[in-house]
Length: 221
Image 1: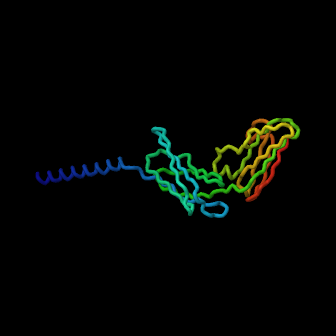
Image 2 (image 1 turned 30 degrees about the horizontal axis):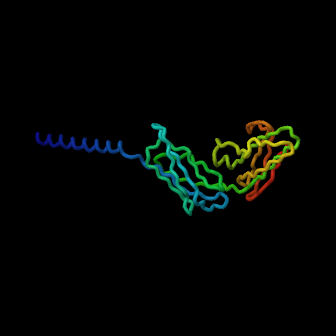
Image 3 (image 1 turned 60 degrees about the vertical axis):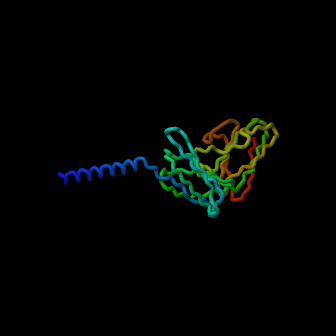
């Protein structure tokens, strides 16, 4: 009888220990979400210092969103660690003046995400000149699209508008604006006398910009 009693106590201790283990796991903190990597200049591979990296976290239960920021060091490296119980990641990007904003996507929660980003320099200028020659319209709507900007920022980005949209000119007046884009590729221009989408623009053309180029484009209406 004594021997059986000892076995009973041993079995009870095992059950208690196991319950502590499982309870501990259930209430333990989630694994951290780590986003780290390096940002370099796409043209020459040099590290980009002092770029701002933003990672957005959100929670489905309370609808709250939180963002964490960091900047790249002299080697272009960055790291963000999040220990929250966030439900997802959104609104994440890397920015620095003189480069196209890079959208960061496909990040996984509670894992280590290693990403390398190639910043596209904004290193060319379109010198746009609009001339109201015949006075058929007093306003003109102008949109510009650069494929590299769409690739970096994402398909939801809107086409670039002129600073004045629409441009309003009396007969004989001229409008000038310098617009900056990545070089080494085409930029597409669309315009018309009334609002339009890219698919039904009344007029369109393209211009090739070399790195460091400054090209003039005239629209006469």
